[in-house]
Length: 472
Image 1 (tube, rainbow, N blue to C red):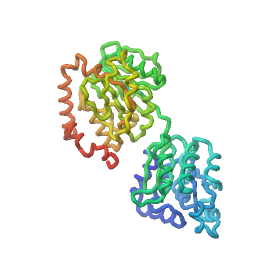
Image 2: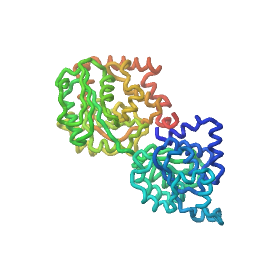
Image 3: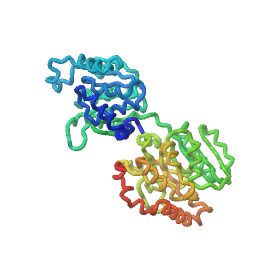
Image 4: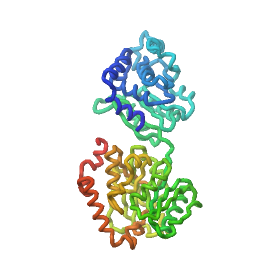
């Protein structure tokens, strides 16, 4: 949870008398931040460490809130102290805005705790090193060109994971500040440089994306040659991305495999007859702290796969990727599955045909597949896959996705693609072919016993509807 979301969630936990004092202290001075916004900004600063810049300080109302919220935060205040053109012309008649700002902060004993930069936003931004700030609060001119220029000037100055925050984002049907909204939507909400965009009480916030580290996670039982080809394909595209492999109960060459020549591979094996869920949990636990991409050893990773995933991952998101599959089950397509015969093995894979499949028009705001990417901590927080109820296989994906959703995660389906050689999976092995139906029935019964409804019932619930994701 980023500091902005944390601040919004904590407002209701503040004692009423403390909340009132925070609001009353700020309202001694003229400014445009409203009563609900005051504790939000106060808490935001308290959850932020390091350095912040306030762009557009007016008479110091918001400045005092930031400072009182966190006495240790290093604050720079940027303003021309000339107002925003005609908007403030009448209001500033006979007033020296900088002196008014200084007087207000002096009365609170705060003036010497902030750095004042009297300059334009664009000029001031040049004096700050890139990747040096933890928080930038923009509340200067609200026209499209100026808002856009402020965002573009200060974005490079933010650290990865830093917050770009601003005031007066229109909510509901109240209207006003449409130009500000347009600029913020273009340069923050819909920008690949930011994630976790949110608006609370008219305050908008975007989190500057961190460099994303991925790990491919693979659980196997036999199929050494397939595993080798899966690794070779990954290494042809992503030479350095870690691969975490757990082998459970393998009796072929997998049990004594040495994958070290491929570099950056974490491999473990047990002779125990462990279930599918436990095998993946082992691979997850041994993986580095990163975004984990769960794959099978009968998959051919598409080019640009991780680059597309990078557009969607965040600590809150559980992102399912798209599988292209031969018609093993007929023309049965679903969300995240495309049926197209591009070959039935690694050796006769038709990459040109695979690459020519049209891109999806829009991502689907719902992920319903085992083939997912989520941060390692997301898996650990909910205890990973359920090893007790779904042995040896089936329904573990519906179970974990339901638990992710109940934990407040957002389930997404994106267009990062792999070619899935379904006919090569353990489902069709000699060992499993006669027992597949038995395992499916048993796991479905276990799911119903655990949750009080069947998997098919779950998928019909309004709770499982994409539109319900933002209200859970």
